[in-house]
Length: 201
Image 1: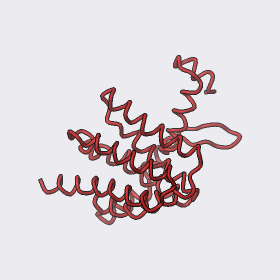
Image 2: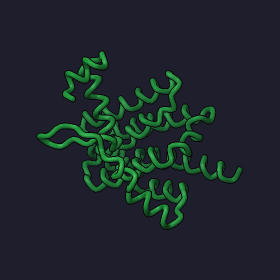
Image 3: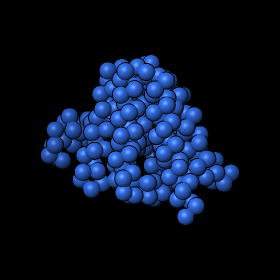
Image 4: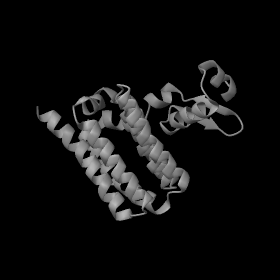
């Protein structure tokens, strides 16, 4: 339905509706077609995610996935530090604030976390990076959400993740590609080590 109608139905501002739609597009749950409007993405398209199919066929693990993310996202953070526009920085800042708000409301903050990482992908201005990351996050957010819940539910992890996101954000704001790369590496190392330790228990 149109933004105005949706805003009236939900009793919120049109700005809130636009922000929500933008987040859902970034997460790959909605798609915007020029001249046609905004549509819910087919669940078949999400469930037939090529990454999920590949991982299932090859017996790949979450650790395998995170190792690949290490290369992709560290490079993305470095590129974002070189190319991010003011609007990209605003979206990153908003994603951090949204995560803080979600956690304060007793939620896990997974949606805002996904938005943060996708905002970095968009800030690279590289369409291939964006498409690859969409596939990663379709799979991470929908396919293994239960596994991710372990990370967010363990005491202290949320605070660490928010500090790591803030460090990445500041490095990108300062156009420091080397620090952005290193900050992202520390973040993914943290997540990877968490799951390695979890699997050893």
